[in-house]
Image 1 (cartoon, one colour):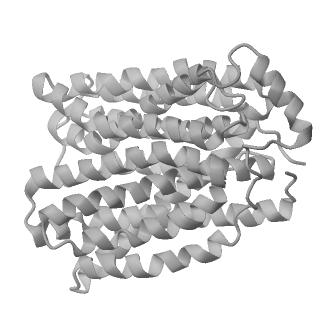
Image 2 (cartoon, rainbow, N blue to C red):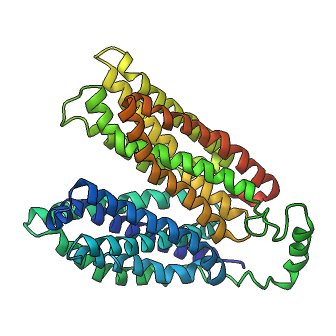
Length: 422
């Protein structure tokens, strides 16, 4: 289906809106957790279980959403999932006790997971219609939305209002804010269950080719399961390495480097600012270097960043903090482009994009989910520097698994290297 540049630009603005609002909802939720904890007297263990239930609900819904996107189109699923993901925030916000919160946390997580897959699938469709790399900026906008949600929560708390009021207001208002963006999404694709007549010959040839058909070797027409697994491994490695920085950068500064408590959070801030900046500005990098070289560079920079963090306790007192900060900045710069490059490659390969993207997303999300627990266990049994060897190795896996997979996809499907529209 040919899409005009004007329609593609409208859809691009819509996807920016979706990513911002999704990040905004997550920012409100994260910033409101302390107030929720105080209201329900949860404590660390029960609060941790709630967060785990949200992640579990999101992971399950991601796997279910892929076939729905392929059947009904990413536009249709976005129309439902965006407003729904904000509306279900009402459940945890009004939960009267832990038992209700546990149930409603799963529902909230499922809403987040459906939106994650639907809007990311639509973003790769918009990128292909647009004719040049644009996905990285979407993910940067998600980060800006999260910062806006957190900042608004801080302002509301300064006025003396409870965060619950803001969560309830957001659950009521944000679903309607999604609507003008939903109206600008790309037109729905024709169902893939009945390919156009001029595609049937190609589909038949694909069925006859080695690894084709429904024999379990392809993640939908044109995308082999082996490549999905390799891309999923790269996404898992990237997300775990990112999660390690989010959870442990400040603690590393405090526990290992002995920084002042007020200065310790600067390590995470440096990582976050570096990642967000590169995501907002990183699309021209991929346009110039191509997807394979970009993910190779991403893995290299992230690995070098973690190596600097690991050696920082061994250098002189005068430079150890600067060494670690430089490492976290490099890690943020490298990891910023991992998800956009992988998602773009999956989408450009064609076939059942929703199903393949949901699998890759679930792989990546599981890395973010298990990472804190694994690193915490290793740190408890040995030390935090030893635990950070894990994300350092996985940062290298980003390049070692991602680059060959994307190179194979580019050989089979030249659209993986997105052409720049003149």
